[in-house]
Length: 485
Picture 1 (spheres, rainbow, N blue to C red):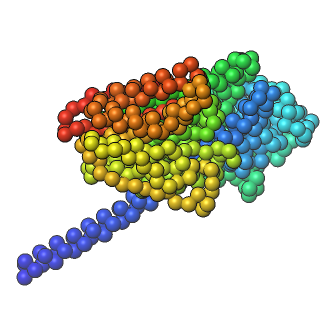
Picture 2: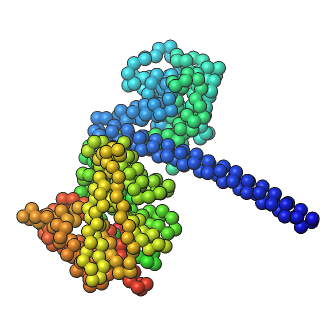
Picture 3: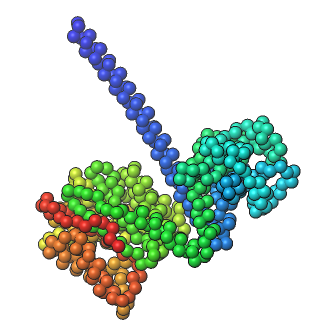
């Protein structure tokens, strides 16, 4: 009887523990789900904001309108009737951009309900010292402020505009408050701002600060200096996005090389560790050249990295990227892509392609294979028309070399207008891999031959190579660091 009672008690305890574990897992799953949704929303907000703000910087004449456009974007995002951005100038806060009929802070009975330029001129009449009034207090404290019943607040008693609800958030740069962004009245409901609107407003304050910094730099430059600064920004962006080195792995090594045809380019490569066993190797080519291609490259890379965090299959990743780019870019913007997923535990390689050049696979004693599964370039067509992206899977063998490249290699021209061509690349790759040439020397050999073929003809397209090579029979092979120039 005592033994039976023991087993009954033990069963009840185990059953209770199982229920607690299930409830905890479900709670954790919901929490992670909510965090993912919030992260995706913030990613979309940043992407949309950058896209909207960049359109206002196409010419010097539009720079003065950028902060107004920024204020309008924030107002639309959070559903505010009006938004005003204040920044420090000679130790005082001064309005720099406004959207909607923001109430003037100086004492006046006159108010011009007209163009934003006149509204901004009216607001600029008063310079706000640190600590003075609502705006000065927020700048001094560094704390965000939400006044849900502003109509009862005596500080708004003399406003020519009815203020029902008010938000103010400090803008911080390098740990210092550099300004304050304010919002008045909820245009969606006519009631107070919701916690979600307040949270979104605080999040967007950082983007407004970024916009102000860029405008401040541009406003002090000549047109040529602005172009040089723009190129410098783009080069910094591109350099920060290209990996400095390849991941270490006992089964294979990677050597990468890229160089732009102009100051900045649209070719890119990336290495994304999906989990402890799987590495995603990506080579991409954005349409066009120069700064527009660089910005498209940055957007594609960001989407890929965000998607890799919830990775399922290569097909879903590429299809999702296509949907994101088609939604958020112009009609003539697209990216070709080669995605190679290496599984160290299973010793396999999965490959998917989106309008990119062929993958070349070489083994000792075998002809070079050209692999090109179907798939349209990302961002060119809507997902329902683009269709599916085929995947190909094969074993990663001990004597195997895999080459991914951009069309700037094969389409390099000589003085007679002839292309270097795929056959020439295959011939070189076959020759060097048959001789067990070290991976770094393989890439160097290809680049030297392309340069010799082109001669004095300038490079017309970005050129990128990524070589993945197995370590033969477990022996150590010398791999140079990735990121050649």
